[in-house]
Image (cartoon, rainbow, N blue to C red; front, side):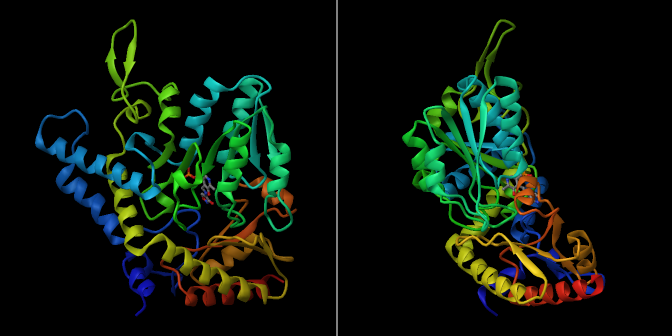
Length: 405
Ligand SMILES: Cc1ncc(COP(=O)(O)O)c(CNc2co[nH]c2=O)c1O
């Protein structure tokens, strides 16, 4: 049994059947499945370590704090941040981006200042900037994509100006699979003095991310996409920026002292972590980091690329099927349509064969508009998928197409 076949055995959920067929889970882009070690870490916390963190002066609370803050250090090392002060726990990528818009955005942007995003963004990296535009009178500029679903660095350079205060971009598209050249994009933005936020929700599960190498100012991701629990994610921010930013929410734990006249805020990262945190989620995220590092992100990327190439070759051979998003550099996501068959009908029929794929606009409606489709069928891979899964996917696509046409 090869390494990835053994890894698959660590996911209990994949042992079930769906409609009498083995479950073929191909929707990791929406949320990944969880390995037993992540499930066990969360269970262990509630079984043996549950207490509120940071302020208890008794052993159980100290052990809970050690586990929770130990997870923060794991995340720091995982993304190569300089300090745990730069690792803010949030609910997920959406909250991370909203936090930056609400704090850094409000404190640093004035009417006429510009945020640049790309045409392939998830709604969670579009709507927060529209809200800020409508509140502050800033400009929101879109970097268009080509028919392969790629951005053009020269076009970005032409858009950047002294007016640009933030470039906010996805590292990897959830709808197209496109991997953006974020290091080069960051360098171009920094040349005009703009800050850079990277939405890493789809990238972190699939590849090694080194925030110091990229040079970005903020980086956001969600635990539930990289084999961890829902409800916990990370905002990385350069310490100097986070230090200068006002708090996001007020309450307990984010304070040092409170009088009715004024409050002195807590140090980083706690200034941004008001209230009782998702302690079990943080510990589960730490276990997910251990899981990914036990395999090796480069090994994950290489294996998923093999799956992607195989799936692309097999799907392209199906009459009437059009792949949406054919970037030279892609991660483990493949979107497609079958002429004459609505994606929702396709996915519904494929479910009858035990195939779990997403049929949607994928919270990337501008991408659907660009390709003039209402939605796509999307298969997205995790470390537990294999070539048999892809053969089952292809057979189910053909069967659904033949039933619908
Ligand atoms: C690129 C990208 N950014 C942000 C988000 C938001 O992450 P959240 O805050 O954890 O929800 C998603 C979630 N993408 C998807 C969620 O379901 N299907 C998807 O493709 C995403 O793919």
